[in-house]
Image (tube, rainbow, N blue to C red; front, side, top):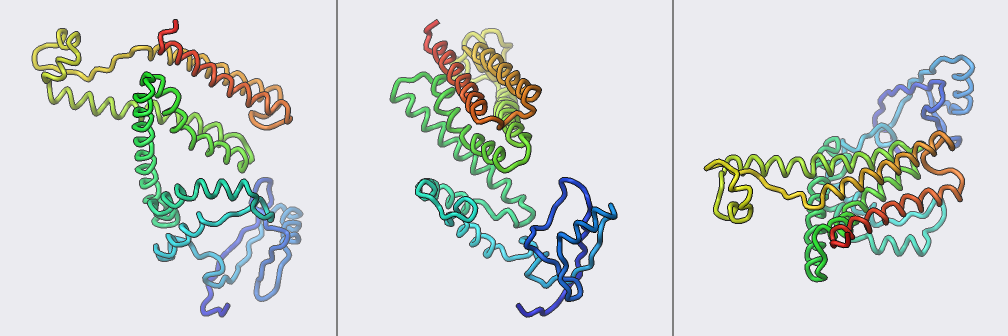
Length: 312
């Protein structure tokens, strides 16, 4: 490629474990001379001092950030990228990968078309667009689950703890799976589960309840509110209304969830002290741990649904 202009960059190669390394096949050019990355690493390790190199980099070859490129080009690459099928490593895609691509392509195109590229404006528009898209998908899943439960005469709590819970947790499941495969530690995959559930509880319940409480405190009682909650309206002073949510079997469900969560936490702690790792390890033990967690979810779902159905 013709070099129309040049600019100077500085690369610091420091010794230390866990730092970025050059691929064995890569090479650096300084003043027209090729440098061997292996030799640079050896020299840095021998002197225990960082090596600073002034490099001349051609624009477009390195150092060009995506934020500098036109938005239309970034969006076009994003749409084309979701259509590509990449096999594992250098291998050709398998039939299963082709099938998964065919099933997920409409959703990938929807996300790629609705969300701005992550390299534009520092990713801030992408973050908020993704939040809106997740909210819209969650709303659709919740409404479809409610309609299905109404058609099949399934109580709303049972629908919520099964269909809605599965539909809204599948993205977190795949995110944790990808993090467990690609990250060197289990931190990302486990904290993703904890963080997503914390957001669901504290934001998913806290914000709507706060807004509803403020609304009813400002609006005051209405005839429909008094008819819906006569026992509460009878205890309120004239002109005062509150946001009402009946607990029902929520206490039992939360108690069971805390119990199962404690068992799961004990399993992770046992793996940490006995095996030295929360995830992975011996194949047989790995499958046993996975089966144990799935079994806890099944047991929790059956017990809670039985309580909702009035079995005990």
